[in-house]
Image (cartoon, rainbow over all chains, first blue to last red; front, side, top):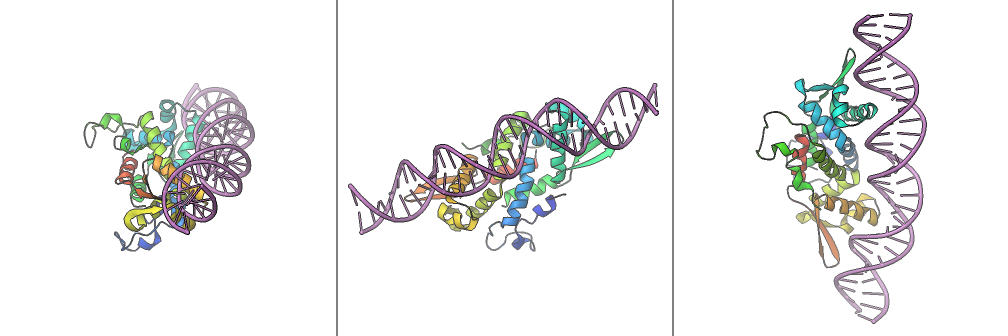
Length: 119
Length: 119
DNA sequence: GGGAGGGATCGATGAACGTCGATCCGCATG
DNA sequence: CATGCGGATCGACGTTCATCGATCCCTCCC
């Protein structure tokens, strides 16, 4: 399930307005847990490279067969990493015929980056 | 050792110019490893809350005694998390007399967020 | 100098994670 | 219908990590 949507409102206190709450509010335990879950999904060399390779691919989508060999990892491992990224809401999966195509969820990385910058 | 400085040049290819390389370059293995190391340091609920609490504290600095109790973790654990963040270049430590004060490294989180957004 | 308190380090323990081989599922083609 | 191939799932194994209690170091103050 996509967890990125939550990232745009890390602290409940500042969910109403856009920016600049009067006093910096410490991150609540619940928000920290959710943000950490998404960051953990990205905090892996193989998964970072997968994200990058999908983004750099033509038409912004790639199938597993394109990703296995340049990564130097086995097909089950790549499939596992992709599943983690999909569950985190970073990538989306679409199966067309024999192949499964992965692409970046628009805005997901930007939302995550914004959450990191405003922790 | 601070690893944040590297984050501003995730892919060696685009280190020379500022923005918009002609074709999106896939993240190299080495860059992915470094970025993942820094992200791993941040991808923990306790450490995210520590960062937030330090940032929200008066004068942007806090000593361990201020952080242990609201976090609900033991003093050695908090000390360990702070060390991880210092080693990652997110926080800086300064010992003044009896107490040790931690503060955010200026721009560290922004650099990390930028690296996430441009993977 | 001796006691007290803030913090860092050490060693152990249990849980989470990355990786793989083997297997299973689904779709396309002869 | 049988075969082949892309991909997901399963089970296992070794490593990493978060956490703690115990201990040690350092600074302050009596």
